[in-house]
Image (cartoon, rainbow, N blue to C red):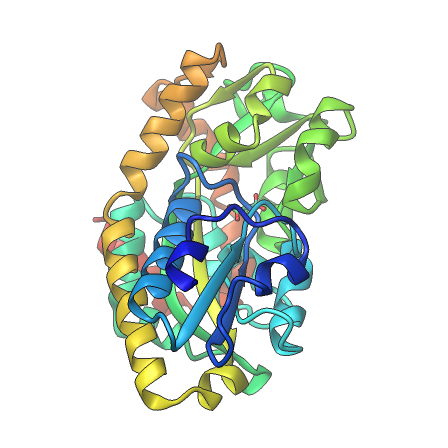
Length: 328
Ligand code: LMR
């Protein structure tokens, strides 16, 4: 039944989902928070699910739960440790309680583009980050790309001062809190699943995210417009528990890792194109997209970049230097 299971749209309950696995198969529940269409993570997760269910039929069975139907990102790492799910792919901003190393990726204007992020992650320093939470029981398996972040609000954002006094939703990252304070905004940490409602009801005025998330969760419908700032990145760590991984038979683990590595390479190569498609879909649906002149963008750089100094000790000057060398 496993190959068939890949095509079934699961409901929100664990009971209905685990019914799709054959007895004796290793069950891999994968909980994430985004939509599945025109989304780098959503597409990658679906591809991983289809390939595991086809190629590992009889040995393993994967069930993906997108759209926060099982867990928000603030709960999913605990759920992994408790064995309630076996796979998650939270953004690197969501690991604050486990490591401060990933703060590097949240620093505004640290990486020029997703290729630079990819090159840093492929370096020894980047690869070592996947192992950095082992003593907390978590094992990073792969970095998955989303893309560059854009800023939206219920007023036009052209100059940094336009953000003065606005309430911005941020992911659960102190770097992002500091970044929004630097532009005079009032940041509020909030789960991804709550952002649309908070924007719609005016609990917050604005947010930052990638085109795929702005399209996928329809943020553009409840904002004045989105400004193409490309001021930061959202990237993911596919993560599991060390206990679960160590408990797998070697052949199952090896086959699973081979599939995961192939899916990672295939889908990471498409992440920028997927975000471009999502941006086009925002425009096609009537969303307002604003561009900055180089001088206007430089003003955002000047206001946001001082945040680096605050987090230098957490992320390491050597990592900052390495990232900057890649951009050059
Ligand atoms: C967010 O919370 O805005 C993002 O991390 C959601 C996601 O997984 O892309």
